[in-house]
Amino acid sequence: MRNASGARRGLNHWLLARASAAYMALFLPIFFVYACQGGLDYAAWRGLFLPVFVKVAVLLFAVALLAHAWIGLREIFIDYVHPLFLRLSLVFLFGVVYAACLIWAVAILWSLK
Amino acid sequence: MRFRIYRYDPESGAKPAMRDYEIEFEPRGKKLLDALIAIKDTLDESLSFRRSCREGVCGSDGVNVNGRNVLACVTPLEGLKEPIEIRPLPRLGVVRDLIVDMGQFYQHYRAVKPYLINLDPEPENERPQSPQERAELDGLWECILCGCCTTACPSFWWNPDKFLGPAALLQGYRFIADSRDQATNERLDFMEDPYRLFRCHGIMNCVEVCPKGLNPTQAIGKIKTLLVKRAL
Image 1 (cartoon, rainbow over the protein chains, first blue to last red):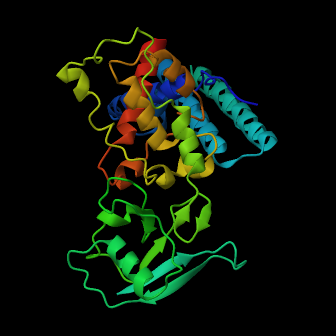
Image 2: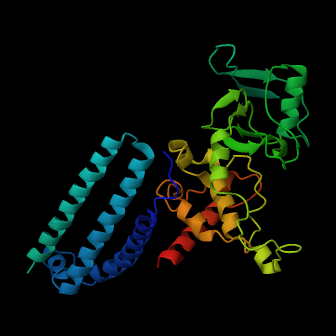
Image 3: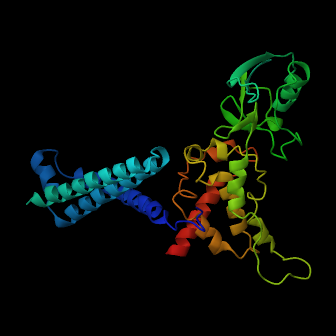
């Protein structure tokens, strides 16, 4: 069976990997500077995450990190894991684990009051 | 000089093996191909390898030397660590000794339609280009299809039947970049695929080994940029 043309896919994943990397590259130094403002005890760290805009920025970071990691893993699976069932299972497994991590991150961030 | 050369003769039934050769040879000013020819002439006439122009134009003597894909005819003997280990290009089937089956490589080359597609009526003389339009093709047309880049690419090693490889993608971009070509959209359609194009992770092995000093990674980047422009 022959494909007449390309799958017209791949560009979105490639762009998303770059967009998430750009966000992380911007977020990390800014957050580092922000975190260095106060002390390094528990109360100060907890206080860092109280403003809503910080919660949103950190959550976006978690989204970017997990999306980036999932796309990277998918690339690795396409390169190295050739049996289709095993590859789909791995992509699905990590998709579920990462989605769970994301929900967990929301729960942690918004439990702070 | 000491050489260790990959030998395989499918008709003998023996498994592939490395064979050592020692030959009196003055390396100064000589290329690797000179030594291979000398070994074939004086030590072992059964040693098989491809060569034609012996000056880096035909692209037929791509081999893997001390772990690096090179053209034997333009690789100086001086400075190579002995024993000089010569193997066929990686990942392609071996026909005999250093001769590989380039079928897969050419199939990808054919797939990118490496010719001008222009449906306008034939002009009286030629299809003119401005010097700027012509300059777009520099760094692309020089490719001699030796296969050094594609067989140095791990993405090609893992998916040789699906990933087009740096050489075919560079050739594909050569016709996308040509102001006289009218099939840019169809070419981009063909390439936009998780395997054909997006197996490239930009590790630049192709740039590292290209004996003509070309930059397939840059060409692939330009294809991706065109895809983004088209989509957004």
